[in-house]
Image 1 (cartoon, rainbow, N blue to C red):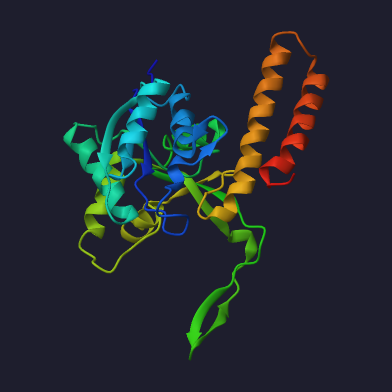
Image 2: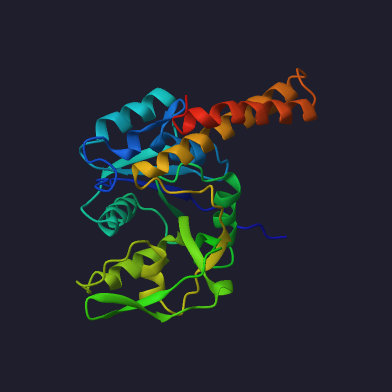
Length: 282
């Protein structure tokens, strides 16, 4: 009987963004949600996953010290590297891939690349990415679109509708995005020769430069949101409060302090109480 060979499963948490749409003077990665900064939620999700073996965090000079202190204070032992990113997202991914290559990471390693400002990634999404790489060499978390999507084009000084794709085939891309190391390295090596190519996510690099490699879809969720502007913070705070209330209720039920129905009711009441606070209500 044969057993599947174990390979490294490495999470790359991208936290080098400048956050110009948020507040350049207050990096969104460091905004606190409950007891952790946003980047801490993301790192913790991979730290808590039993299948993830190592974590690489990509930073910029502005946030590096605070993130390194967070890693030490919280005991995120899986974080093996903190590397400097670049001006663009692709530069940060390439910096991480180069560091992994220098460290001798094997070609069949599983690499999960995640936006640090998606703090509510679930264990199911992480496990889904890891498992999918047993069948495919690339995968991305994505959420089915509930809105009709318009493809546009320029007409003079206006944008007009060029095409309305079938909504059943439309998804909103999220992260993590997962790859065998050799696949994402090859895709980026090919993309390096194209000065005009500026993808906003890593799966597109594979789609564009390795078209024979299908990118599988792993089920995402609307709660796996990206904090992009300050308008996203109320929902992020509400989601964080909801998660905390459910964890506390589950812990109370496990300790025998509440039965399951009472625990669920307590969680709902706490979320209602926190709802107004999250949205700045008195």
